[in-house]
Amino acid sequence: MHNPMEMHASTAWWQDGKLFVYESTQGVVNHRNLLANVFDLSPDRVEVRAPFIGSGFGGKLWPWPHSVAACAAARVTGRPVQLVLPRAQMFTTVGHRPETRQRLRLATDASGKLVSIRHESFNNTSMLDDYTENCGGVTKSLYACDNVLVSHKISSINRGTPTSMRAPGAAPGLFALESAIDEMALASGMDPLVFRKLNLADKDQSVGLPWSSNHLPEAIDKAAERFGWHARKADIGSMREGDEIIGYGMGACNWEAYQVPTDARVILRSDGTALAQCGLQDIGTGTYTIVAQTVSQLTGIPVERVEVELGSSSFPAGPVSGGSWVTASVMPAIAGATREALQKLRQYAVSKDAVFAGQDAESIKVENGQLVIGEQRASFVDVLKGQRLSRAEGNFQSGMPEAGKYSFRSFGVHFVEVRWDPGISSLRVSRVVSAIDVGKVVNPLAARNQVEGAIVMGIGMALFEAGEYDPRSGMPVNNNYAEYVVPVHADQPDIDVLLLDYPDYNLGEFGARGIGEIGVTGLAAAVANAVYHATGKRVRSLPISKEKLMAGL
Image 1: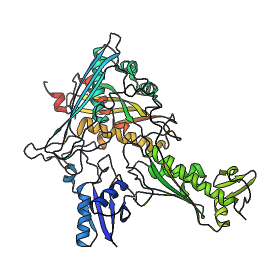
Image 2 (image 1 turned 180 degrees about the vertical axis):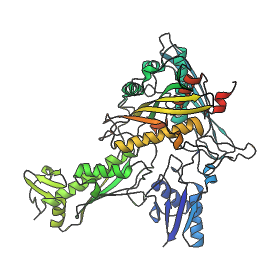
Image 3 (image 1 turned 30 degrees about the horizontal axis):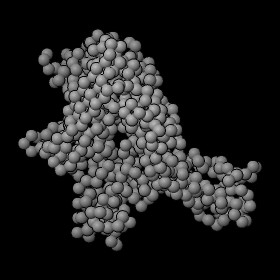
Image 4 (image 1 turned 60 degrees about the horizontal axis):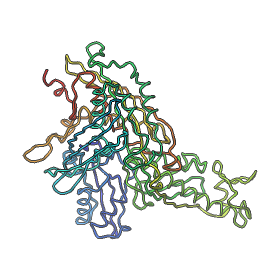
């Protein structure tokens, strides 16, 4: 269920025939366009603002009814209206990850090479809308296999409409696939790590294209060494410490890599500062910092003197903050706008009576906030003030990578240690080591934070979280933080994240791919595989509860 600490909220008011909305949204431009259609306004008469979002996870990608209700109430009353969803309605009116039923059939040859994979997936949707959870999307390409069949079917039931939730499709799909891969490895008499490496795909067979960049074998090796996989004893329940039985498990993680069209504006100002604007959102992932880093890198202006404005539909249009595509998309847009602003500054510098009058603008270099020709230097401030100008402005729209040349994905692996105390029926995840290959790591601190948070979310998926519904009404019955169980501080394991840093220049000039979602994929399977190693019980439905482990004892 989408149950973040920050709930959905809308604050709306009308002024001079225009609609203004502060909204907890992952897409201010998309939200503006919908409200313009609902209230029969031109888009320039609606402004949606979301300068800071406490959380998104997919639940705030699209507009929900409460936002329209707040706008309508503000128009009727002629007053500003704020509408905050109560916690209970977070379980009914803003989407959730749908329930899935998945069936996998795998076959190998005598050497352990996969010869057949069949992945069938079923998920529920509402009576009003069709929503398909693409559980088999990763199955098509992660492992090399000539015979792959993936299918998806939906069933309409009396519940609210599902929606995207962090790594839609891949998170539940990789739980099923990586659990099945583990079972297949053991049935083949092979170590799960060896089996996976034997079957990794060296290209995307689903589309017949080479990977733009793929360092998954290295990620597996480095994480396995850090984790101590070599010390794993194959026999079930054979690793103990005191009263606890220790289990080791692993799971590959995988997510698509995107770069989508993005508009941006950059202004170099006569006070020596810079302003960058883009109509996308920072949902807590560090977008403000990455934008400032990009401007600083190209201009030499210190990061602390770069002002960044995001989260308004009045800014140049940006995409929704989803799909882990923001970093890869906004950096080239900001870079293009910065270069346009610098080019204007060069033109100002060579104009009549300017500091480089009569010289070739193309020969001017940029160093540390200065324009340079040979030994001659002039700061941005001197150039602008010398021409009595307040700014040099650049605008740019980035595009998409060339289609049909490469398959773009990010890769990684989780190694998990669980501890099961059968005397008191206590199960916990004690240790996680993850290695992630996401191209260039632009901001290591923020990137590691994203993976760590995703791991905790994956632990919630594996051990705790479950929406419970009343079959008589279709309404959730544990729609609060008391009964919808999530991981707390006491549940946190030791987490060690290794970030491979191989720029993927086939995707974009900065080589960065998204990192927000990949960390949650494969984690639940790694936990389940570790639980099997410790207990001998193969749990195929989530969450893995002590009741399921105690059944039959």
